[in-house]
Image 1: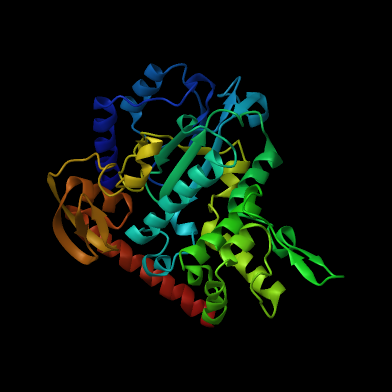
Image 2 (image 1 turned 120 degrees about the horizontal axis):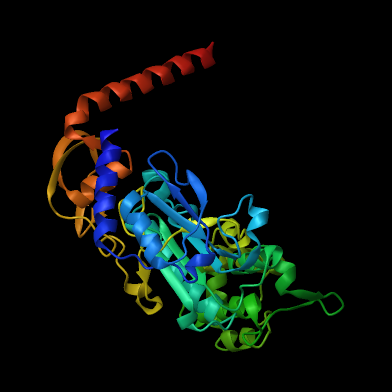
Length: 399
């Protein structure tokens, strides 16, 4: 297709004029590459050096470049058992469209908006500050962050956890996602004295987090954000020492009629709001390939850009990863959601021929929402053919 050739030519021009930094210990990594139809069409590649990798990218310009979380003795060997696993980075993938945001219903999972991307960044920051640094004692200089190039962020830890396998990694993912935590994990009942004993702010892990969140909610008068009903909120606010009492483990300082139900709901609300929401499969399965930092994402034309960990909070995903020019290109847009790039809103468009900057044209073509203007008739005919086939199938299903 002409659109594929158009995109490949632009990717090739980029890789031929930009040096791409290789992952650490590149000679131990497996690589996979994808094209117009599939994100990973082939794998089991390896490179002996950063120079060899860059030469390959300049010649071939794959639309998708992925590499292994794992280090192997023989990364190009197949099947995977023959690669001889040595160790593996601890990797977390946060996808904006897997966070349960209401905006996803509107723009669908193929697209993103500022709201869901802000939420993805919030989860990435929480993962780094509240879990990796605070709970796992990982220095920030050992944490690598990159924009995925499309819908979220990838966080890599290349030290400390490298020899952990399988279920050890799953337990880490479960912990940051708060999987399996419920009322009985946090509270115990004294049936004789009919009292409930809860955690303290000085407790480690989620026990301390849960207590601190409630204490902060009382002090800052923001308990409603934890899903607590207004009448109950007033009970907490009316007792002057409520925050101090709960901080020290006295969770009965405020009288609650159905305490177990209240505390159970509180735990669930805090889990939903303060988990990291990472893709557990990416963390758990070290055989997976993940987007290579500083490569162009074939679904958007944006750079899967490395971000200094201290710059993440102010990182602008709509501008910083744009690598193509402002030169105008005429395209025919079949249908697209609004897209914000370099401070400008493009769309929504439907059945429109218009001139767009190269970076916006590339974005919409990569999303398969647009074609080059000269191919408008072909695109319309193809759309009608698909609709005809769908209508035909619907007719059969009714019969």
